Image (cartoon, rainbow, N blue to C red; front, top):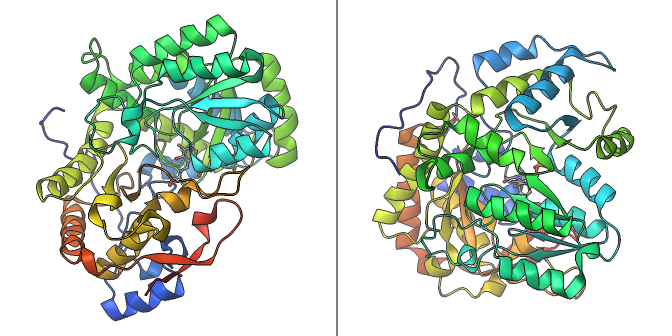
Length: 459
Ligand code: P61
């Protein structure tokens, strides 16, 4: 990673006030929220690192774009602007707007999956896997082993392991694999990139076996940055070129534009195949809206089109990832166990090593996220056994190797001082970590349980 400055390529024109609460208030709030940071009120949070989704700061140009909304039910000007921008920057010929990423996942899964199919991917994502399962498929993790190891320094932990992929092919046959689903900057692995070398190999594998390659491009620009920094032959390419090259290797994509593209809401399904596009248009009207708005307002499509162009600027992405790395380095130097290498959108605390006295069945990462909130008002997110949910066939808890707390940095929102305060809070919690208690479920929803589950302390 280059050590040159990552100073923000913008200045601040408007601010949103936040306030610190007392420890007593936070204890009350966390108990009411059942020790689940998703159930806290945002007003009770000081620094909100729950997610980088829909919480980025839009630019003045994006806000101006909102005023240019063409809210016609059909054929909005903003749709054509968005479609042309997607093709220009991301290569995909056809765009179906959706209200957010999971809307696109729903349509994709329903169209491509038949009951009994298998979908290989580079680590699961919660909503992606659920939609695959609801459509009748089994998700198969084909990411390299290093991705499950928080201390491995592999530069491309998002890479696919072809032994795993070939083993699945041998076992079930190509007919049972409708597509391979590849995420850029793999979220659950710690924001870890896939290399272009690996992706090119995967393209060839998919061509050989006549299997589609679908791209979860939610954080493609951050992935491109790591390729520029780490992969031979890319240091002189600009982010925009690398993003295009990644997308161009794949057949279709789902996008949650609430991340990379810095809008508060929106997403899309994009593809090159005209027949597939026609089918997607047929389903989007059932679940989202007409194919020229698909659940988005015209103004939001305009802000998204502008956000895409900003998201691939080299100075933007250097500052964005630079800020994440800044927080990660302070924590690492203080001896806090984190996932290495530091990811693109978040710093992930390794709850197994921070709370060795709490067994995984008592949700150490959930307990750590709650404790960090009580200590400091910093909100983070569990990414461990609670997020992994239960096996859809056996009903048993899945036990992921990674038991993590995610400190997710919204784009263009917080300052270096906020990162310092966050680091101090984590270091303080670590000093008292032996006092943190394990948790048990008080309420467990059936699907995506982490969003609404409630817990109580194990005495
Ligand atoms: C997040 F706790 N991510 O990281 P939607 N693919 C990928 C995502 O990161 C993603 C979606 C698809 C969120 C929001 C969120 O378990 C959770 O626009 C790589 O959120 O529908 C979303 O896109 C889905 C948080 C989602 C979660 C699911 O914070």
